[in-house]
Length: 334
Image (cartoon, rainbow, N blue to C red):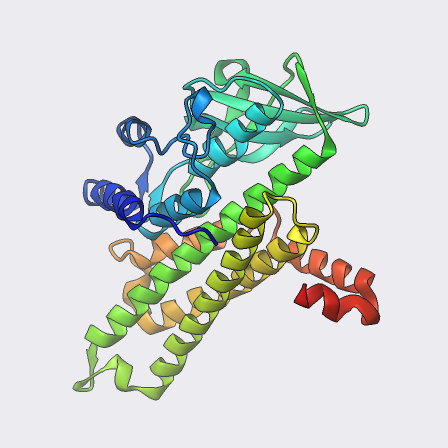
């Protein structure tokens, strides 16, 4: 995978670390943070330079998502840059400076659990009508939005829309939109698991029980070892999917399989990591004063978006069954 400049990675981490220090608890993106990210060229990191973007790619975007998730800062980075604005550029529409998210409405014109709709300026709405995908870039004032939150406290809103549909999008673009969102969530989950592992190790090393640190107890060692193994698996499968997407410019014929593997592994890893970490930290890990809940709730929330764990397990099963006994190994090793 393409190596990202370390100075850029350090800058991203410093921005979110500074934001974290200036907020109590989990930091939701506000106007000041969004403005700062914009000044640094991070809001439209992957956008075309001719249209006001920074001209970077998915490797840089992945590091940005990881930095935000690792520091517990909630911002619509994926929704705005990698999804909504990408979709507009793909179909030939201008993006401008408005903060955006994207949603797919049902036949009644309604979408539930839309990320950041109530905190956005515009929403790119996609609808399937008459066998065609139609989309419109809509001002939030022209939408019926009922605010809500997910278990991590992020905006997840109900959106009702009936705009004048201006553009058609092919199925391949909408399929790619879903896969891009799925990979973004896998990156965020794996970063949250990295932070949970760090918190568990720090607590087990510093906490003294019966005159010795928790790391001296074999049961705790096993719990932490399982956290580390599942976290490493989540990161490895996510990195493999990201590398395939980057190297083939999202044209890998097996990309859905690779993303499905990443999403399945990160989803199941989240169960083990969250359970074990809360066992290691005990009662203190359930308090609002401790950071653990911010990352455990985020991991559990994100793993259910752009396809649940069950959905991605089913995708893997279907792909394996279609390949059959003769072609399964070739598919896995390709």
